[in-house]
Image (cartoon, rainbow, N blue to C red; front, side, top):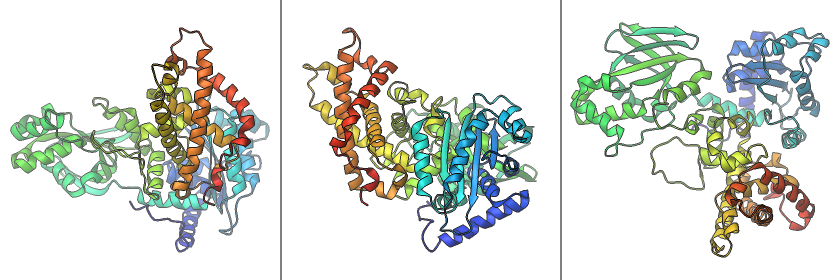
Length: 571
């Protein structure tokens, strides 16, 4: 991928900073706003996909009593309120002061109770926050800086997140110039859709307009789709939740090939068709259209199967395919994919692969040789420790929080729906994801070892405790140990974490965590009603509450366990 090189190298940093300043100044000039505000609008537009005009408007809430809010944007579709502070340093080696972070955190109370803005004479902000009911909206607070990293701010962010003072629906992030450089390079190279090509329909095309944007619907010859696939291969499916899953005997793909081969004239009536999402399109000649920055979001199996059918028999190219081209807002992409795949066995987890935060994480992990959240390519893909599956790492991340650990243990199906935003908040660091993944490998290995040495006939209770629920509980206890023993997680880097030495340190946490979990769990479940089902007892809140209370008491002796501080590993 184009993002495998480190953008913060000595030779590229000055150029990247200059390029960023040019982009930020262009926004500042266009909106008539300061650099500090312009960087928030640039960030929202470039990295969050918010319309630039709306982003500039959101950064124009200016005045002496803005309560630390350089940028306020309400995303009604996603039910999120974004509040940013911005800062652009005059020198690349200068970092933002802690006052910037403190002002951002202080803004939480004002955003939740906007009347304070009204009393301070900021009626514009008051009206913005009260014109619709936002009581169920989540909040994202971010400090966006083009400045050197401040360790003090990084620690404060970690402490703020760890305290959970502001509830599960409030997320925090901190961007400094090195992290912005990474994201800027990703954003610059992330448009991996087909940049431009044509699509020729067989006959008249229907045009549709609505709040979503505009669309065209018509029949296209299979040969056109095969041409596009031959030219772009998997790039044609960048917006699809899965790639071609094969042509196994009896599969739907085999039937598609057979139909196109033997009954090309009937294909249009027998196939669901395909959906293409494009940034924009325009008619050039009769029934021929130019599509720009487009991909097939539903119909990968049909397209590849037709290509294979044409390879065997050119007459298959005459088959007509129902094609819908949608020119829609970027924010609708996930929903378009989700609702276009309801007729197929595509899990919500697969749809989440397309979220911007997953794209960002995917790019970050390539720098250390990890494959993150790959798309479906069939059932026999080889798994490995450096292949991070989204459904698994989501469970591991859920297990690291009081708010979601029970869902990670017992309700994994809900992790990609109700709990998704809290598990993958804006500003989630790839190091946090890496920690969850590596920790899970060590916990799983320790749990399996303990389980193998446990005789189910002699101790069925312990056998149940060390069953599959033992992994998320072991991760939960491990993370608690890490948080309570002085590790400064803000100093972790993917490069440092991807070492044997770091994994060795995590092994010590995993071993101690499984020791504590198994001892405490057996005491909890054996003091319950003897008729209670042990597995069920591990899946409910009373177990979590008792585990936390006992762990709190045990942690008083943590200094004697000699667990390593993770930020010091390899230092």
